[in-house]
Image (cartoon, rainbow, N blue to C red; front, side):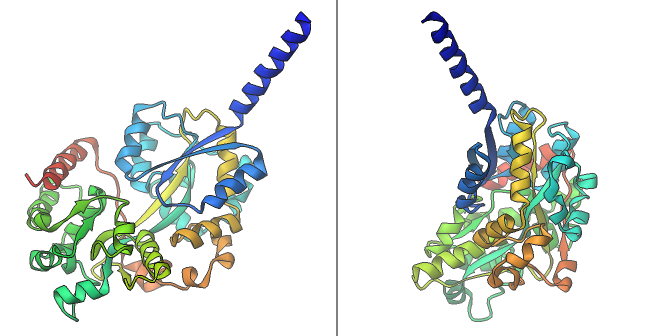
Length: 361
């Protein structure tokens, strides 16, 4: 009886250990995946998937640079990834465990290599642009039929923002998105690393601050869709999700997205494995699953963002692959800019300035 009890205890211990080993923890942006894919991953692999969400790069970076995040896969934006690679926060990918790497798109790989040389540490999940989402009826009511919905003038000119304040304006809580756009608005290099040049955006942003209802990087999706606000300066796919939610609700709200004609930020969200990931083998299985052409297409079809997977394109819905707001044509691509990270000293300056802008001080 004693032997049997010991054996049973040993079996339980082994089972618990196996169960622990077969768990993958993923930390991704909110509203950023077709949740049926999470169930599919568990069904196909037998691995338990713990899936948590965040809504700003700053939140993720705090976890990553502190160490011991507890996650196996995280999804930083390219410029943040670059800084975190330099800090030693990630482990190199093992191509032998990622046969679906063959599906990736060389056009995007070349661009993401600016942040991750040789794409050694990450794969592209989604990419897109930052611009203006508008409730067409409310914006035209406030500014007239010729409202500059495709221009940075819409959100950076105080005379426009003063009129829009009554119907509500949200901005991303993301200085690395908003400050480059403000630099573009005043004719400066959006990727400037000159503190004096960046400081020129402070009066621009403080001038419109009284008319911004909220800085938030996720709530604007539903706020736009429900007609609670009339303008959001946000990410392309989020705004297109808002457009479709409004259409599905048949609530009379018509949403449009425009990348600024002056030039828009092109960003890349990259899946990477922390250096201290509890289950790196399981993490590779998750990345390989995501790189399956049909799985990646399902994700893009759900979130309305472009992805870096060439093989997925044959499975994309026409309203995704055929929408130039999601997959810009060659001319529009040439008008997009990218952003590289601030060094620690400049980051402290930007963070202090951004805190002051948000607080209205």
